[in-house]
Length: 388
Image (cartoon, rainbow, N blue to C red; front, side):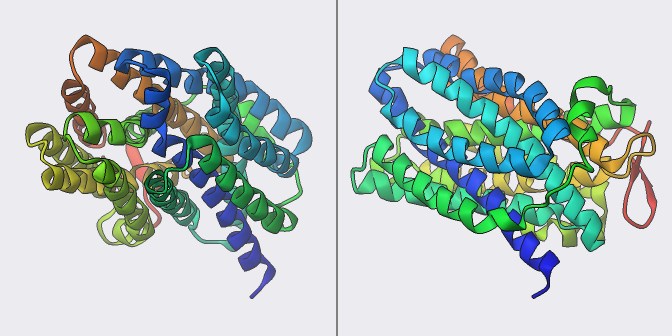
């Protein structure tokens, strides 16, 4: 195995670690809600701490990657991120969990930007598309985290104990990967670009598609368990089924993305992805029975799977910006969708109900279909120009 392959494995393990931490938090959200006796609206307010932290982390990530390079940011940020997780479970009051979640959201964005910067640099060195596989590992970690969460709930581990075990696993992963993380500052422009650059029309459109996809993904992460508990009325041992179905479909779908885009093209894949999101959520809302909703969540997982890798693939071929800057711009727009969607679900559920919130998120799928079908800009594929 050559050095680049080892670096790919190490960087992939870092994506896995970040996904594992976030999925572990998401798997116990119903327990956090019950612990503090929060309504849907109050839970939405708590979840708003994550995008607030993300906004704080954006300029910090840009400055730190520019100043020190992505390696040192990844290594320091990863240890703090892992150690923040058990603090969430130990928080005794909402006044304590709020700043902890803000820190968690801030570090999440810092890690998102720095890891994607590393991935883009490694992709250039290897001379082939590998970005989707990293996002597939992130999704696979989410699936793993959901399974671990279900096991911890079954074994009656409280969130703090559960999170402590995940933190230990995470630290071992970071210690394994650290010597293979790239040590340079060649992509420092990514961080400053996030703050200073304005996307052109094409990147803005791709960013909006990614925003809708990631908003759907974030909502499924944070609200799947609550939906199955309160709307599907699943038994306790089946509450995590929707989350597991969604994550399993998304993880496997991302490993198939490169082949699908090579055969059908990026634009048709985006359109089909949006349609699957719409159908899956609509099915889950109209027929909220256990296995029907589970199948609906499978559809949503397969639909979400291709959105980010395909969007990043298009953005990386921008004619106006270097690939690293274009990727960073789209990544930032999409990440806000990922973090803003879950609080929105809570606020809408408080005003109406949770089924209405999920029906509203189904419209994201139609938005993706429409945005990828407007024939005003040009999407660039690997081999030819494709009009959208």
